[in-house]
Image 1 (tube, rainbow, N blue to C red):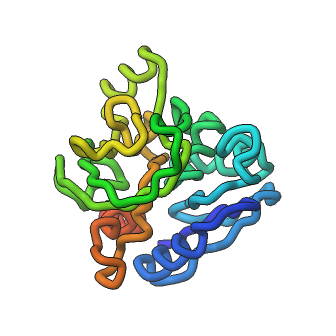
Image 2: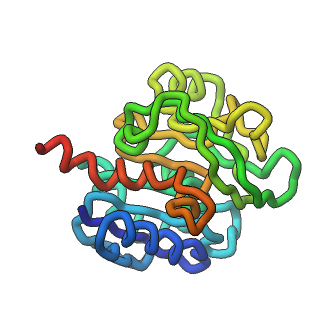
Length: 226
């Protein structure tokens, strides 16, 4: 299975993501600079974490308007899988590929620690290697991870099962509504999440709880074709 990583000025989790995709997917991902208007074919496209354009204006706001995003929207419309982690999640909401917004953390401070996540929907192409309601360990590192959506949008997200991950009880680090840590689009092929699963994929990292997400995203197509 092939993958691609979209890079912006200020990306700083790209190497971690590249290492995870290479180790789990078996080959290095394509690297795509933000000024590209055409992107290579891949089964999974990833926007990694970091501080694209220095978080100027709003986190992910400028990245969302970069030339590469038009091409990425075309891939999303065709059903290609897209994953945005941390700043990638912010970019996906700013671009309209995912609903809602990521606001300043409720405590107004940068949060960098490990949290517990609950798999809220294990029927997505990103979560089907986990059990429903399985609790995972995963690190977070963000200043603007407070997920917000208006009442109508929030109800729609919940009713359609678009919440993929929630922060476990007493583990919400940022004040996100309904403890939301990650959501998909209505079609289920775009996932945004604030925690960093790429940083917990092998025992040397202290655990492998993040590995299942990449195994699912990179391998499900092969399973469906079998």
